[in-house]
Length: 158
Figure 1: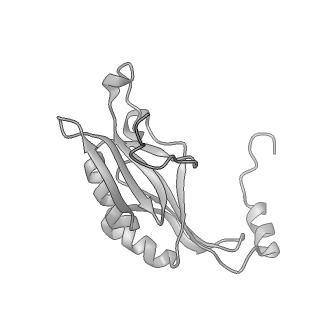
Figure 2 (figure 1 turned 120 degrees about the horizontal axis):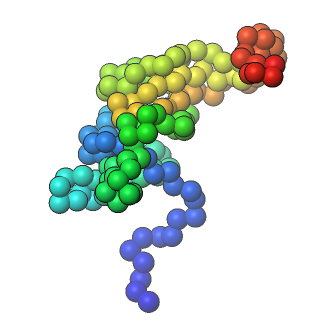
């Protein structure tokens, strides 16, 4: 058997699908400080496979190929949103949010001190994916948690 071209991964690697992966790869570098590891383009310019790294944590970024999925797109644009949020801890959440917004992200809310002890913010990228950024803080605050839980939606049964 031939020697592998890369080491075997033992972690789970998220693959995010977008419309415009070449632009998205550049955005993730500019907005979130990712390092682009590679990109493979199809003859039409779409990205078959791209990889970025956040301090060693790899995320795959690919273009949507509905023609390879029974005509169904799977990007957030195609499905009307995304059910996941990508999260990163950062040294300075305020600076990280400013950088991401300057690069084209939309601030959803924050940054603000949270009852669980982090300074936290939520953002949307131009490709439909949700991101959260946090700077770890002093730890949970029981009084702030009680206030937050009092105002938290209780659902249909609560």
